[in-house]
Length: 244
Image 1 (tube, rainbow, N blue to C red):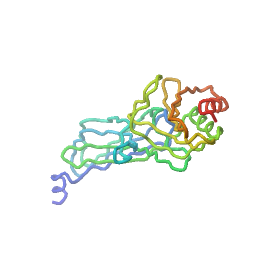
Image 2 (cartoon, rainbow, N blue to C red):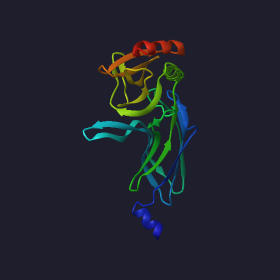
Image 3 (cartoon, rainbow, N blue to C red):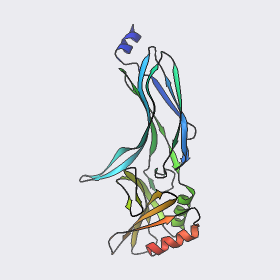
Image 4 (spheres, one colour):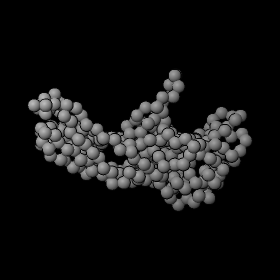
């Protein structure tokens, strides 16, 4: 009697579990896994099963900075499907992460970058089901070499977060509606800080540097990285554009 009542009221949701093959992946590579959906004591109609890749982005407002969830992209795995009573549906997936995906695995004093995969199961006449799984991302080899070059040039990574908005350069524009900033303290007097963002365009990874100087207004420098560049050449480029 109780089971029939909960089914009638839509209070008997299906169970969803998303299993990632590997929770840590390099940006630009493939995130894979499988979604398991287990039915209840009654047949259910699944309107759709959708994966959302999400992060937390910071927005500047008149009342200060506000952090909010931001969806980087969504993929629908299935639409309008009947899940029979007590059946189990398994849906494998492979998602290629853009190189613009925020990098979570960086060592700094304050790392505010969070990334997760949210599985949404929309069920007709029943409470929807969700599952959330953290995703950890590493930089591409050329990005990793640049981060090492910043350290070799004397800069120290203090903070990283994700900002709402777009990177706009003459080489291209970011596409997520948000972008990652890596904030470095400066090694010399007269330079407050340098904020670094990556903008991959085709085969080139552009680096956008916002340079904050003590006695001058902020300036922006953009230059490209490719797979053949050595750390030493990157250090030279960093020193040239920052003046350290």
